Image 1 (spheres, rainbow, N blue to C red):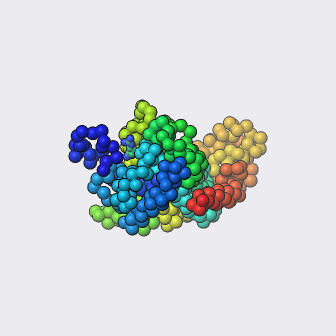
Image 2: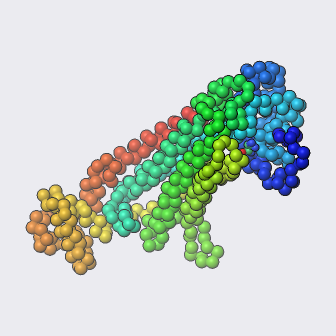
Image 3: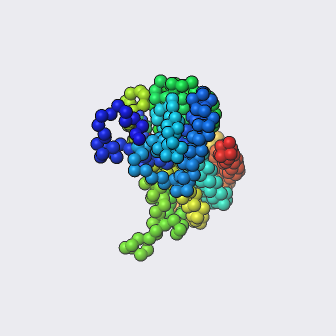
Length: 469
Ligand code: ARG
């Protein structure tokens, strides 16, 4: 039986009927639909709408549906179910008889789908944060293993200053930790329960909303029934956060692709994550990285789809909202699929320390350190800049580096230069002068690694807390 056929004289056009269904994709919400239905049934019993026996029958029926779904690994089939809500009602009635229809007393699918989606996003956030902790752990391990290896840091994709490889890797950890934090923030805001909001105006039975919220581990009931049944901000916030995560991952993928080219040669692509060419026998391609970069487009597409779907939608529930589900599921699946790959790749990749160190020691990347030498001797910064600039020009003419210039050459630029100048040009001295919080001086980077580990540990603790709550 349909959930709404009473007032209709005509049956639906069969093609339209099939086309408008959401069961194909919303059946993945079954677990949450059953949980929410259980909470609603208990509230109905407390409100005196269901007898104790009826409640037991309904709860047993719901449990059997859950067991059936578990046995079929969640891939439940039904040729007629319009959506997951209809499916549960049909199943329940087929198991416990007409009393199953009582479950829908005083509720609407509008509040149900809003609740199911919140539960789904909440669980996806917990899973993603756990994956992010693994990714951050993998990056931090590699940072630690990189030890004192340095590399050029680039601005404008031109060699700028040497940094520790560890410092570079920790930059990504910061991005991913912010993503994890944004997900936590989204979780905090979404964790309220729409049950009892009815179709738009609030339940027609005196249901204890705080009780239902508590049953489902929400922080409390939503404040306004019109908003609760039409709000999908949490879906958009979640998917937007994932598109930002994707954006970070795509920057990482792009850098790794560039660094793995023969021109750079900083990164040896792990064979376990690369493929060859069917035509060119010598090729080893960075497939994982390219797919990560490509899938970011899907995540951004998901967020864009949601924004356009929600724009201009009058209050409250409109069937357009059904269209928010697929971009949500696709984005969550895409992100959840990506992260373990990224962690695996990071564990397997080999950095060419020799090449990286070599690149960090040529191309005048010690020029700022050279200017700092003069500044420390009282030369105004602008003049120091100018004088070292001239020294670089001299080097370009002589095809050498700053450390190769003679004291005589240097003194034509400024008589203040002495023998100690060469020491300040050493790679270790160049790194050491960046001795500020967040700088690349080795001691600061060691602190950075320790701080990252701490943040990752507390991320893991939070995730475990939710998993066992
Ligand atoms: N399948 C619907 C959706 O996902 C459930 C809500 C239907 N509500 C309605 N008034 N037709 O949006």
